[in-house]
Length: 118
Image (cartoon, rainbow, N blue to C red; front, side, top):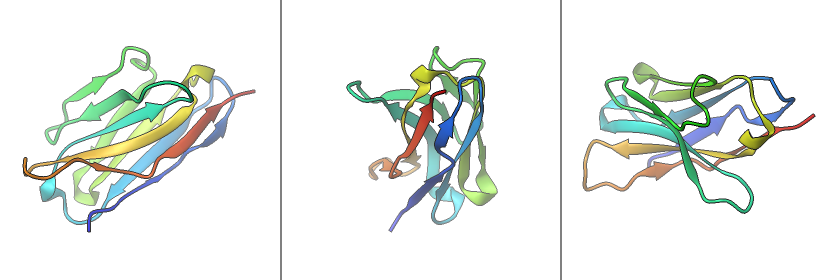
């Protein structure tokens, strides 16, 4: 059974930083792309950032220059470093994994709350 375990959310003041982690069970060989989505109250879920198995990255325009996605393939773990946080970054953040095997569905974490408020 595949599991994704997220950690690192919390309450932070505007301008502060947080680092989210997402650890996937098993070895790295089944993992293709990894990424983060977020969903704020009353809004649709949106892609924040993603990273390929080769390290190529994509970011939402709203977080470019402030967020950095990375992964440690040896640990099957992905990170999202979030700097210069704004109140509009407040949301539940979900990690996902796209498997190498196209017959498998994407896997999702349970979500972690990020609240940016003074």
